[in-house]
Image 1 (spheres, rainbow, N blue to C red):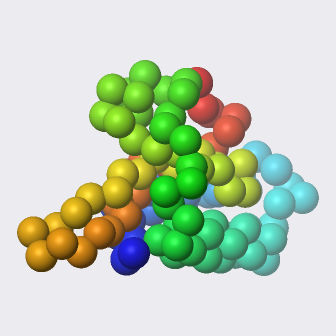
Image 2 (spheres, one colour; image 1 turned 45 degrees about the vertical axis):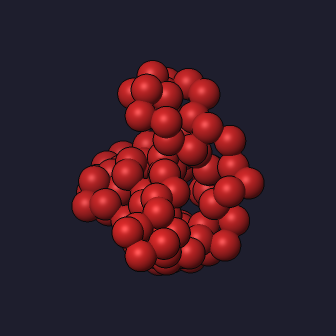
Length: 103
């Protein structure tokens, strides 16, 4: 399945790591770039594995929207599988939050 990533997801990742680098001297840009690359690789591979992950369990907004959830690099991602009019199935990642902020 093709994977589509909402702007909110990009924003959440960027803003988290900008704040993290500002507060943690040991966290440098090279480390952050590697983490972000792994996140995007995992999101792209979600198209292959999307059906195996459970529905969201802790975030009430995600639960009410029927999102499934997967975790990578301490980020929780909320997504849904959709079927388009032509029958093609896609994965759309709607939201992301780091484990430190997840509740």
